[in-house]
Every structure is written in structure tokens, then in C-alpha cells.
Amino acid sequence: MAQLYISLGTSVERDKYLACGLTSLTQEFGKLTLSSLFESEAVGFKGPHFYNMVIAVTTKKTISEVAILLKNIELKHGREENAKKCSPRTLDLDLLLFDDLILSEPVQIPRHEITENAFVLWPLSEVAGDLIHPVLKQSYNEIWQSYDKNKQILHIVPFNWHCSSTK
Image (cartoon, rainbow, N blue to C red; front, top):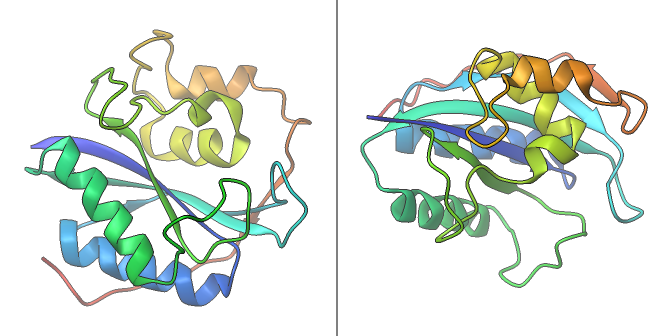
């Protein structure tokens, strides 16, 4: 079984698509380990604030299967196929880590946004704080502690989600 970490973001009908994304991930992977839910300003464009979190799951699927699955979940929940990178979105699911692999294809692993964006790094440090970044050789807690917290301002959002659907 592979250990995966997935970033979830939404800025359009946030509560609805957050629940849709988590339900779909539960249906595909079973038990989810969730970070806190964070709100942040849009990065790279002017737009509505985002909700972001990181989800840990295990799977027997290959990395290619997971990448296709995440894309299909996004599309199922209203994501436009050719949506610009910096734009509002119903659902954005990014594979951050797949065990300790280092890859550039079929997706970049570890994903470069981990060290660039507080809305990825802070929630990842909550669910995988002691895990070591396979390139930097530092724990995600250590990376978060040295991150410039003034670069992006995040707020924890009260959140309570329960899904009865299991794999």
C-alpha cells in the first residue's frame, strides 16, 4: 500500500465542493486523514478566497491511476477541463506525495507547491509533520517552522465533516 498526500482547494461554492471532494475521495480510497481546513486569499490572481486542506490516504493504485482519478473527480464536480492555472475553481486536487518517490512524470512528485505555498505546507505539516521531504531531507514540520509566515496569511476555518460512504 502506498501512502499519498493530496491537496484539496476550492473557491467556488466552497462548502458544497469541499464536501463533494471529500465524499468522492472517501468513495475511492476509504479512510481519509484530514488536516485542518484553511482559508486563504487567491494566489497569482484576484479572486474569491480559497478553502484548502491536505488529505492523507493509502492505496494499491499506481501513481498514473491516482493522477487520472483525481482529474476525473475534479471534472465530475464542475472543474473546466482547460481551466487556467490561476483562476477560481470548484475543486482542485493535487497529488503532493506518493510514498517517498521523486518523479517528474506522470506528475511532479514531490509537488513544488509544498515549499512555496503556506496553504499546502501548513496543512501537510499537520498530517505528515515528521515525514521527511525526499529532496530537501527535512521534515515538513522543520520546513513549516522556517517558512516566512508573513508571505501568505491563512486562517483556520471551523470544520466538521462526516461521511458514511466507505470503500
